[in-house]
Length: 125
Image 1 (cartoon, helix red, strand yellow):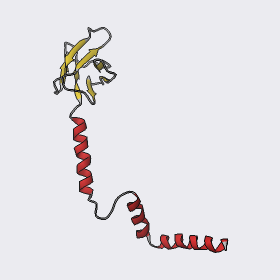
Image 2 (tube, one colour; image 1 turned 180 degrees about the horizontal axis):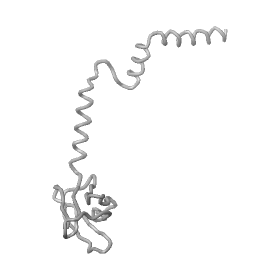
Image 3 (cartoon, one colour; image 1 turned 30 degrees about the vertical axis):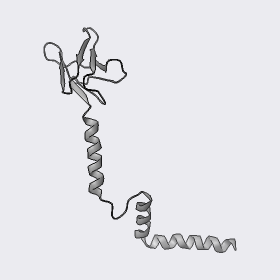
Image 4 (cartoon, one colour; image 1 turned 90 degrees about the vertical axis):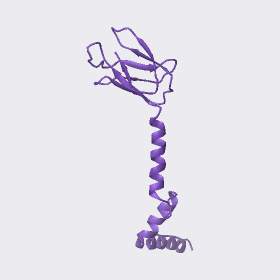
């Protein structure tokens, strides 16, 4: 009796292997995708979320008085742990920043500065 049940089980697997469409359909259904779901709708919602996340990104450029980029300057939103370090080009980017937040820029050998972010790219000298 046990041998018969195992044989039936393996024969069902073999029959699914003969029809790859059944296997793919089952996997798509399991993943929540149906033939009626639109890939364009999925792409639109991802782009919409991406655009919302990008709207609160504080970015800018930190240079010295001669216009040379400051590499490795600390750029932090005052009173939080959100921050960034300037790259080789002096640019920085802080995600999820609030418009009107105070940005603190510091670097060894320079006087620290505080600037209020107005929602636009910053240029700090």
